[in-house]
Amino acid sequence: MNILISSLEESTGKTAVTLALAELARDGGDSVGYMKPKGTRLESNVGKTLDEDPLFARELLGLEADVSDLEPIVYSPTFVQDAIRGREAPDELRKRVRDAFETLAVDHDRMLIEGGGHLELGGIVELTDPDIADLLDARVLVIAPYDHPGDVDDVLAATRRFGDRLDGVLFNNVADAAFDDLETDVVPFLESKGVPVHGVLPREQFLAGVTVDELATELGATVLAEEGVETYVERFIVGAMGADSALRHFRRTKDAAVITGGDRAEIHTAALEAPGVRCLILTGGHRPSGAILGQAAEKGTPILSVRTDTLTTVERAEDVVRSGRTRDERTVAEMESMLADHADVDAIYRD
View 1: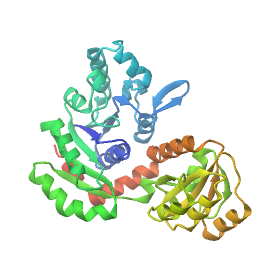
View 2: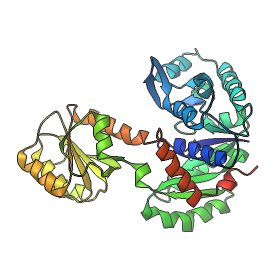
View 3: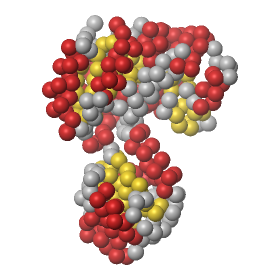
View 4: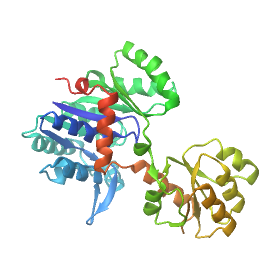
């Protein structure tokens, strides 16, 4: 049986769900293979640009497979440009994906196929997730976020794209404020429309964010105030507003890091007074005053210093949170537990 795990947008936990499902099937005695036809989360690796998800999957699942089969298409900006210029033939790419899949599927009871960053990615070469589901004769599990009722439009549009291949929807990383509305109203509505919902996974801070200490490591930051580096950050706010509105703005956030210039003492003070601010990231290599460092130590709010400018720092920090913890065995174990508690895994794996 082949299952394609697709998603409505990036950073919905698709990789963690895919690998956790693989581990749960292995726990049940099945031999499970993995494939990500379009490599999209690209990193430089020994001189090559590769998606690190297939590399981690190979290690975690103990697969004896070539990376070129696990990831037959590296969907890089160069690849996309070549495709636009007519240098990549869709028929040849489809054959490459199909041949790799057949090689990987040998001797496996189940194949889990991870989709691209979002379900329509790959349209340039006629290899969107719906195209791949047809090519590899796969059922489809859609991973969806949910913040407000308007998100249901996107869910319905996606399920229609997959048609009869749709296996169901799994909502992931749902905040407490939206959880009851989703389970009470949205799930019954979707099921009345013929869309199976296989589970609603609540937001888990370990999976949704990174610790300040991890963030410091990824940013190459200097830690100026160390109290509280074990706390989690899920979002970022740029402290570019005036001092008068800063505190009001900061008080409306939760589990956030404020990124601002190291010479903006009034913004530093406002951020340290807001209960939802978990750390300060000061840009430009500036060091704050002793009074600010003392206030941070008293509040237990860490301060990081980076030499990059604010825009670059924001982009890098958001990339750290978007990348998440997927390449970590504990992350997969946490997701296994979440699926066991909040999803109908048997329905996902029905033959």
